[in-house]
Image 1 (cartoon, one colour):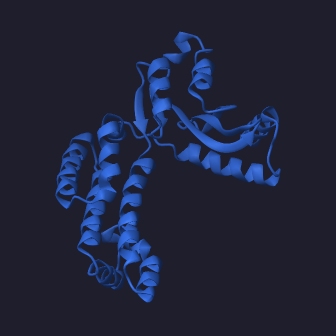
Image 2: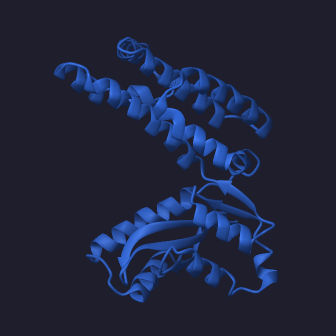
Image 3: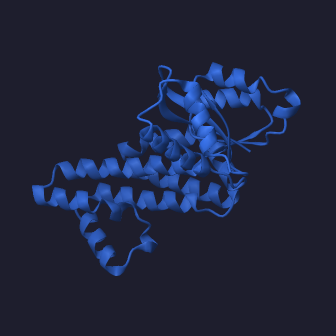
Length: 246
């Protein structure tokens, strides 16, 4: 399993560096000086074909450059989109609906909406009775917000599917309801699903994520902050790899 991601390193005049990890054995494989497709492709092609054929799964976020490179270098590998990035698109959509409704409210109610935003993002079944009452107060302000909330719940239900067959059925239900709701804020979600559906559905067959890689990125941020940044990429790379050795 090969996981690929990027982080803001600001080393050697490159804003972003690329990280390659093995999430199955929880180890960093390497750090590349940039995230450009030619850099990644050149690096991966430096390994012999028989070694590259051992890679069966690629875990990544929704990056078109990464997708093209991985399909070219590992044509037989299954590409899996990390679920966090999929759910984040839906969260952004309902947040944008909230902000649109919030703008037209009196000052005190705007503050209430902002303070209570987590109620909209939480799973309905995880709310207690008091929180549900507060949520109903928010939803009563707008039909669009109610529609957005119900769409979010359908999307959460889709992501929580137990297998691909169930996921396909729930995704169809979400798409139908999103079409009926006709909220402009959810249009990017629909576009994302159209562009990435095969790789998103792979998450229900292959239980891999970028969780370990994202954790590495957070630790790298700490390393960079402690050192007040690294100008030299090789020094930065060695410091990262040494910090993750067991």
